[in-house]
Image 1 (spheres, one colour):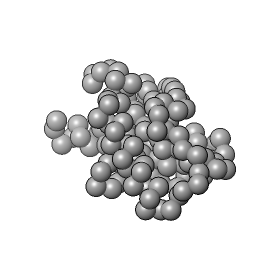
Image 2 (image 1 turned 90 degrees about the vertical axis):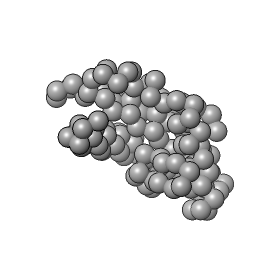
Image 3 (image 1 turned 45 degrees about the vertical axis):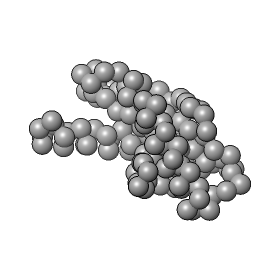
Image 4 (image 1 turned 120 degrees about the vertical axis):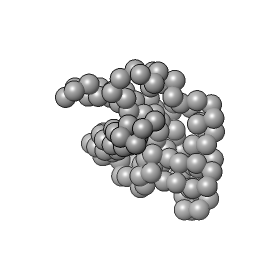
Length: 124
């Protein structure tokens, strides 16, 4: 992938994360982390509402050129998210909460933005 294409993809991903952040804030969640990176993986968003902590994977596309959005969440990716979540729980002392893994799929086509939120997209 050319440098310009990588930069465009990163910008689109950041826009998607901004949209997802607003989506969760509008629903009363506090954003604890964005782009939480540890040696075992990465979590796009970590949100909290009451006694619930939500680990969120955000996928953003402007075309179907790289396949569908949902196909981008592979078993390997799910495993890395789960490992990163466990790291977060142990490191940050966030024990005693309920946990959930959500996915937010964002498709941007010009000015149009479609958001699909899947709560409890995969198990713990």
